[in-house]
Amino acid sequence: MMNKYWIFNETVPESMNGESLKTLLSQYWELPKHLVYSIRHGERVLVDGKYRPVNFPVKTGEKVQLTFLPSDFVSPFPDVAADSAATVNILYEDSNLAVINKRRGDKTHPNQPGEVGATINHLAAYLETENTLPYMIHRLDQETSGAMIFAKNPAVVPILVHDIASKQITRRYLAWVQGTGLSQTGTINLPIGRDPEDKRKRKVNGMGAVPAITYYEVIKEVGNTSLLSIKLGSGRTHQIRVHFAAVGHPLIGDPLYNSSNESDYLLLHSWKVGLALPFSRKQKIVTAPIPAHFIEFQKRLEKRH
Image (cartoon, rainbow, N blue to C red):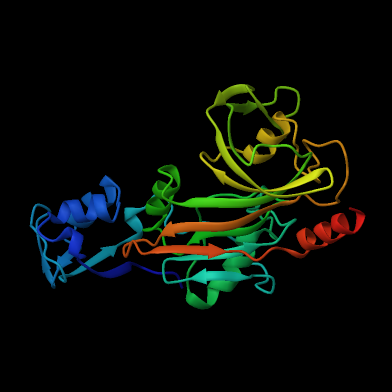
């Protein structure tokens, strides 16, 4: 039986003392206009147990209760089939979200109706015991491993999506690339669009290209390969893979953008995510341990050189 409503009990922080309830809801907690309207209209926002108009000034330490109904959301209950929870590796979890360590080779979500076996299906099985569902926030390519954020209720979805769009959620990756000699730190600023010759691929200045920025730092060089720490300035499909291929340093083991086969696996790992937790806005950095295929690749490299 899924939730009929979602209740949040929060405390007014010091920084919001004397601000209006509306400022607290929309600016500090980042609730979108339509949700603020719904809970206000339904008198489902209480301050110290009483309904208050949104221009009411709030004080530090006051208790604010928010109640959301399924009718407040376009998709209150995503259609996600539960699969086995055996492979789920939780890196961080609270009542609003889970950061999981995605396995290399697992899809993020199914592509066909009725398909299972994707990361979101495994997480759905894990969350069944909590009587909740996973809500998609961002994606990782099938061959990419590592930290990935899912929401656990529909109210925090727009908050997390907003934080990704406004770069308040930071994502750092590790990748082995071909070649050496990259500057110690650098920025790749090249627009990415669709590849007209291969619908699976993206390319720099492709069809409908949109701005894309990638920041990187060289961690080490071994032989003719470099290990990079990479931070996204935008979140385009295949962005890291396309950008490094475009500057002549394709990712090792990339089946789409690198014709040499030094590894059976794409060596791209979502290493750290930094986020302000919904409502509390407490900063949290979650790190996904370096996967076995990365460690094995480095050992083989170091043996050779």
